[in-house]
Length: 217
Image (cartoon, rainbow, N blue to C red):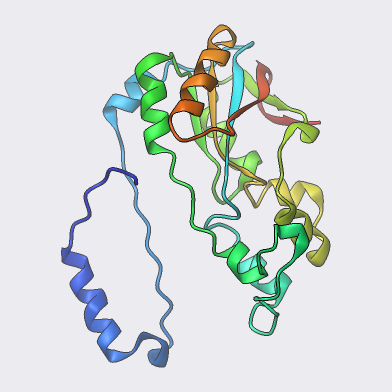
């Protein structure tokens, strides 16, 4: 899905640990990958006021904020299986474990045809910490909160944990897994490309303006 090569070497250690019984030893496993693309860095030319901010929807909480999620929902004792209407008939467990959406193919297709000024992967830290990393000094992303297409799961989480709205936007992706900025004149073309390459629900979210950071209003 991500068109990456996985070095099998480290997996041998994981297999050995698995034979010994990870759970019995108190281990919890996770995986992560980091990378740098000189080609991508050269393609991103930087934002300018007036640019359009486009959103690629997430598939759920992805892999961020799970310490808080587990505490709020008390997952050790919660009913994770009973269907919940607000979650489209999914149980809480299935909704929380929906696989993370991968955006590589859609974004690569876009880069081939449109001048992309910025890309921000909305991971831990939510909107407030991730979006500014893709902005030039003197630019801010202006986003109307009512335009963010937030799945019901986040509303349930906020209500159950009595979490302030700003903390929600500073911890979770709130339904937006990736943000792209493009010239306003190319926004419609960009959306057509994204829709044709596996992201049919991509949408226009906001605009780049003069300022700093993120303005949610």
